[in-house]
Amino acid sequence: MARAFLFVLDSFGIGGAADAERYGDAGANTLAHIAEACAEGRADRERLRQGPLFVPHMASLGLGKAAETATGLGFAHFGTDLVANAFHGAAQEVSSGKDTPSGHWEIAGLPVRFDWGYFPDTVPAFPADLTAAMIREGEVPGILGNCHAPGTEIIERFGEEHIRTGKPICYTSVDSVLQIAAHEVHFGLDRLYEFCQVVRRLVDPLRIGRVIARPFVGETAATFQRTYNRHDYAVPPPEPTLLDRLTARGSRVIAVGKIGDIFAHRGISEVRKAAGNMAMFDKALGAMDDAGDGDLVFANFVDFDTEFGHRRDVAGYAAALEAFDRRLPEAFAKLRQGDLLILTADHGNDPTWRGTDHTRERIPVIGTGPGLAGGDIGLRTTFADIGETVAEHLGLAPGRHGTSFHAMIGGHA
Figure 1 (cartoon, rainbow, N blue to C red):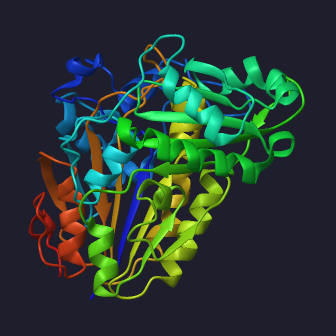
Figure 2: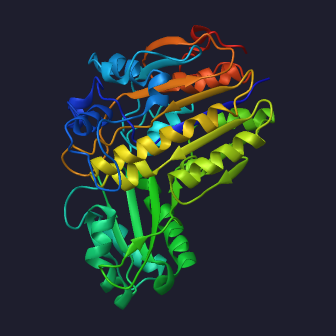
Figure 3: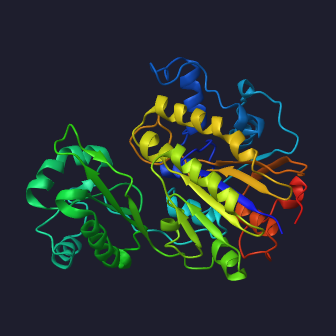
């Protein structure tokens, strides 16, 4: 058997979604708009980055070609010289959301065919009976926020009152999510996790995809800072995913970053976490070293989304892409004959777009593996084709959703 490595650049969309207008995202394109801003000097920042977007290793895998497949727009400035065993294409999501669980579940071979529940963009955002139950069963004196808001902004707005009163900060967004921010010391990290577990149970009837613990530290609005002790409490997938199929077979699934949380820790053999993309990359490299025949390393690099996409930080997003790209040769060097490495995304988060939320976009599907023929895999009609390709590569029988492109890249099952 072989090994597979699936790296998700969280929110790194490439535009072109056929149904983007339905989501208010017609024209959104994370990659194109970052590249355009860089080319025009609008993403220059002293001591951070300068000039055109420079991601030569992703370009050598066919990122520009993938972007052309997604939108029909040219990306000649990325160059056309591809490494011999690279493959490239794009994928359209069929799940109804533009959120993290939908994207990741579909990548793992399970499209989300039902509609998630959402909270309205009103104040208050949560139903009165839910709020009362959160306060009563969570044993808190009340809640703050109760609205749609960006995470850093709402902590600045309510953090000091939270410390004084002990009321957790509860907020949401256009995604199917209820986020809870609380101070690691004054409220307590364990208490935050316990409160989130209570809320997770309470929102199950509302089909809310995730309850997210958002711990922070600091003493004033000027010094508050979120920590990397975030924890997602997700609904478990309703059917077996690629991860379940692998672990049932006896293979290991090593989850790097928030992958374990996204799948409610189902089908996960081991979780490895770290603070920040570069530390996460170190964890992914270590997992590559430890993976055996038939194993999958599934890694999520969340900073693109949380630190730069939601904060509409174009220069920061560009710098993060360039930093990630510089590390890719380290991953390439760990590939051995029979391995498969795929780089992709779960949705878009165009940092030039209005608002602060995810954008409905197609995603890149680029990768390599020693001995592969590589080539153009075209436009895939579902993210599930990624999971089915990994499944075939690792010797699993086909699943219920998606079509493998393994044969198109000269795969060796």
